[in-house]
Image (cartoon, rainbow, N blue to C red):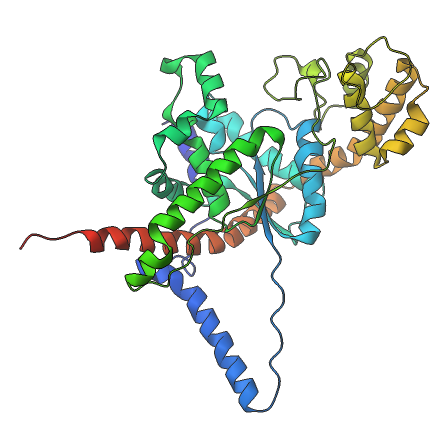
Length: 406
């Protein structure tokens, strides 16, 4: 492992000693808080005062984006833009999954730069660090530690059926594929289960991974939780919440500008296929001018014979915040030349404030460091409790099952 990579992975805030206990200690802070709350309730009742009702807990949402390549319009409309509204409705944790990015060949200096750039884009797009925790995955060590524990309970057959592994390994060849490409769905499960997540925003191409996460959670709960653990003197119950999918709004899946049947992607060889969030005006104008269209008259949604038309109209609808009906009334009789001009203007108007804010954030590294440090601290408080609790349950069972020789 190169020094540069070590510098990137290890350049993280120090562990929070107050929240990280050894073995059984990790579960104590939560119990102590409950005891204090119960004491306060008893004292208030004894004195004749009514205890205040505890505030309703918001459901927790977690999500992340890899820092590989440039963040493009598909990432923004399909994920990040939705996060802005989610942060007002849920307790949210949004992170940059840099550990997932090293499953394929990469350059460590570029990865470090891209990680910070992605965090700045989160903020520039409207993620508010006072409402959401923003952090880098490798800065919370519990992600990898929980992955290792989960991998001991995950059957290899479950990983062998993952479609993305099959596709990438077939293209690259077995000798060029690392073990991490096979096991990274377990890391993804760790990312989700570590925070006792209620909901996970997913696209159509991610449902298989979320289903694997649910299966792992249910398997671990069955192995180490419930009645079995309670009979052994533990508290019983589930170790992990089984998360549900949070489906993004219809039309949020953005397709390639060169092929309306393929998803807009960072890995596509042609940059012409995507609008990057930081593309300058002239580049956006040129990409829209040259994007693939068709020869049908007028413009319409949802015609399977016109995937490019549906894609471009959907982009315009989401960027402008208009309804389908409003877009149809405005655009159905336009020719492609007129509509491309309208779409270009809308994209530039929408992306320019993001680009300006991004430059402001990147010019103030101290501010960005502070946001990431605060976010990783908040995340670690939750993560360490989950990790210590699971370690206590799983390892304690194995120790108690061991029969020492007489």
